[in-house]
Length: 257
Ligand SMILES: [Ca+2]
Image (tube, rainbow, N blue to C red; front, top):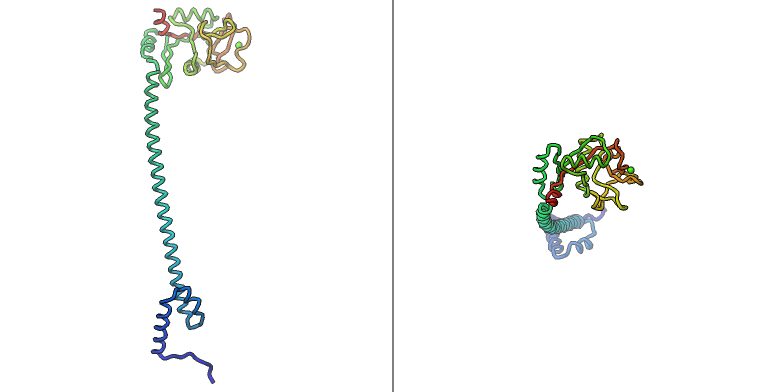
């Protein structure tokens, strides 16, 4: 005898499939999966797995949608931050413009000094990049002692240079380095009553002494070529080292008037 063989007519098969369809359409897929374990139901179980996979992939898509939504939120927040930064930038630009305006007010007008300088052929006019500092200078390279240098400047209509701020010192030393790299010069700085003073009266505040300077008992200052024209003190009577660095100072002229 042959073994049991599951053999239904076409009509019976159709009825069975319809019945199963009706049955499983009312069950959640997971329940159908649990119940259908026989060989007969495997295709249906497989279909159900497909449906579940499909649902899972739709959920994943939905997660992606949520990610997109989060990203859009982040972009919106970044745009807000950028806008705030733009406003901050605009405000700082405004502050900068105001500061530049104030700087122009504080910077002295150098036109008069320039005009006066042009009337004195021995002198040359230099101005800092900011335009706030200007010097009308005369560099005499004839070697002399300090008193001789003072006379040279006085005869030219000026005085030994005062370099009392970092800006003016930088402008003057840069100019000397560029135009007189092999010369040293006396400047208007001397040691008197225990302290260094400009023009014999104004105590020094900003200084640019070369390394190891000033050393003792040398009471007149110079820009020394051996130290990139930083400050050196020398004995005032030394006559074979320095020329004279003079400046025209129209402010003093006004004060004298
Ligand atoms: Ca010295």
